[in-house]
View 1: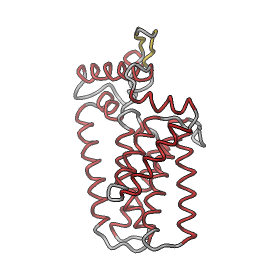
View 2 (view 1 turned 60 degrees about the vertical axis):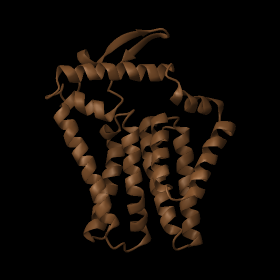
View 3 (view 1 turned 30 degrees about the vertical axis):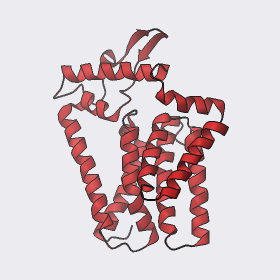
View 4 (view 1 turned 120 degrees about the vertical axis):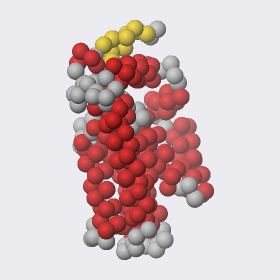
Length: 252
């Protein structure tokens, strides 16, 4: 599943964020039941989760799971339902989808081996340039190389497949510390919005979903340069702007 973004990882990041937003909105809607609203959000959430599964993007699957666990942390029935959905996917889902899921836990899987080599190389680059980094665009002569493994050669290229390592390599450790500070501020904004007078179900759903979305992006960022993906980042910033509107009492 490539979506309108044209690339499955980008589409997966978008689906992950939208699915969690739909879940947050659904939880808010259940407090003031409206059949039309609940059905609409349920259908939207289901379609988006299925599309996310169809991307076969493991990092976004993990991100969504972490976000959903946060949303359902006090709702045992919902947690059991989530576990049942995962179980059904493993039993009834397409074989390649099941294999993709199981590969998350296989350290010998070629994709996992590739990432480990990329991360090792990234750490070595950080050690060489801990303060200034290599520049926003990592030079090809520093990034691209080929590593021999028992399963054949692996080509290391493109980016670090980790938002945190990518920032440290390209902009240095100080930039990574600034990024951590920025994330802390996002969480603080979410906390302030939660303590603000909520005026409608949309705002309540957004306030519920926002920390889950942020946790999902941070989890996904362990394995992907998602904070460098403008389509995903633009959607996150849009929701952040709406959250700040809730916090300041501005119509969002």
